Image 1 (cartoon, one colour):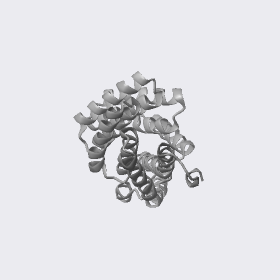
Image 2 (image 1 turned 180 degrees about the horizontal axis):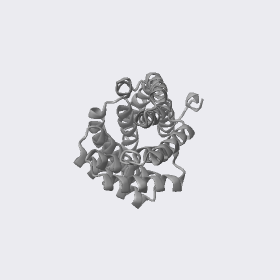
Image 3 (image 1 turned 90 degrees about the vertical axis):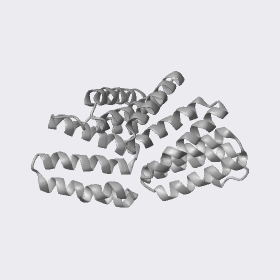
Image 4 (image 1 turned 45 degrees about the horizontal axis):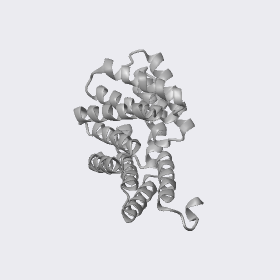
Length: 255
């Protein structure tokens, strides 16, 4: 509704488009989120302001990650970082580093991802941004997990979870709790963490993330020999992935 108002300044319009794109990503409507990101980029280029360009490129990078196009996001995010530095916006620089770290992690470029995540973490801490710092710790944890450095991965995930709980970041809580199950041998603890993650993602409204946790819950039930319950949950996860366009995740769930 606000976007329909006439005479909106470019910065205000970008903020509104950014919020709407985030909401669409949460609901799994990545196609329309991509359209919002494209409109943001057009506005930013027309305004010729590096801060607006950094904001738009950060949004595009996240859309690319959610579309399963991390190979594109590792190109987009550095451009966002460069624009943020030109504008003197440390907050947008930190966000760009976080986006870059996640894209690199998903590309299994683990050494680069760890470096980017630690840079983001330090910058977020300097800014006093607890939510951003917690999310940077999560990317670092995922990277260490990729490297089979389980003790470091768990410590980083514990820190991410504590920071998310401190500032009420339910999305960050869900990601951290889910990641803590990767190296957890105790089935009861895994189940508890997954239920915590699912509850957090439901509260935050991130549908595609709910599919991830539902899939992981199915794996636990399968390990317990409860195949029919596991199958029901896998079908639920597959339905979520179809609705949100998460084709890569769908293929794994179907397998």
